[in-house]
Image 1: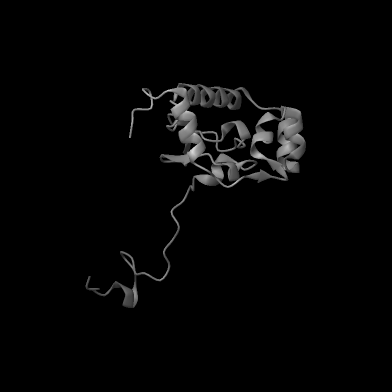
Image 2: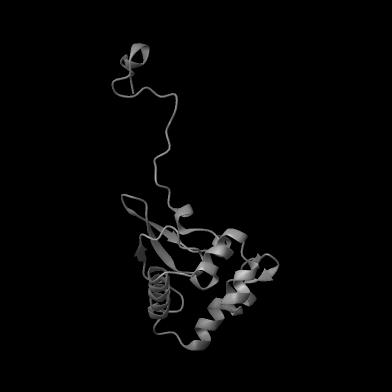
Length: 154
């Protein structure tokens, strides 16, 4: 592939046009129109709990995260993913302007990389970075009592 920095604007536009995707709608509004909505119009579309959260206001931490995401998106070349922005804000609501960004969401141990997709709008970042390791039931473990502690050939 050609170097994205060496390509002209027409080549970049042609390559973007070549990739066709399924149109995404959020509550009957197309993604392009969703990005054009003002903050107050967007809040009216969101579910009640999130609407209440916005009515009470975003904190400085949430605003800083949005600024970092905008900056990372601006610095990335047109056809590559932006740099990952790490955050502990699991309670941040995914907004349309965040689509396409890459966020490292802290799960208590490591930052799980999450690429924001249109389907994630209106959800919390924490929903996409699991905080526990799911148990595997029915397998003998170390120190298991009774029959399960017998030697099991591999």
